[in-house]
Image 1 (tube, rainbow, N blue to C red):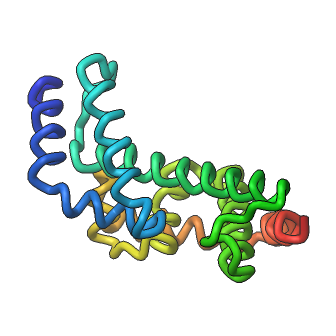
Image 2 (cartoon, rainbow, N blue to C red):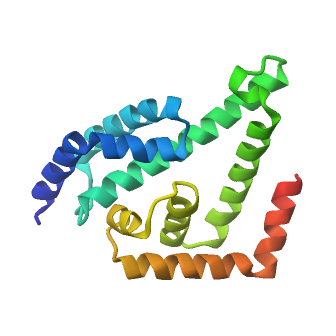
Length: 176
């Protein structure tokens, strides 16, 4: 597949599989924010695609990576906004539930440690599996790798997370 064919395939997949991409974003961020994340992600892809310097070997994986990263960025933005509002005494309604606040803060702290200790592909596979709740075949398609590679990446990530030094870092981050 040539670079131009790959870019055309990305554009076609954005249009023909929109519901799939929306489901992906909604698995990472809330239902309410999923549409916004998808729209911003599509705009980002459309804007950068003509000058994208690398050859896209897996159009679905390319889209999934961009949208997943955009969704995580949105989670971080939401979290920062909520903390700023809370600091000034104006807590948004969604954040008034202490369980939601605690779960989100914990997730972001754990994600920070994961990104430090796991290689990028293992990290992405782990987040897609355990946060996005995707099946191995779906992850393989999104990342442009074989299902056996997904299983191996998940196994290596799990093994890394069992390391006592990593567990200690996780405990330290969660205690802050």
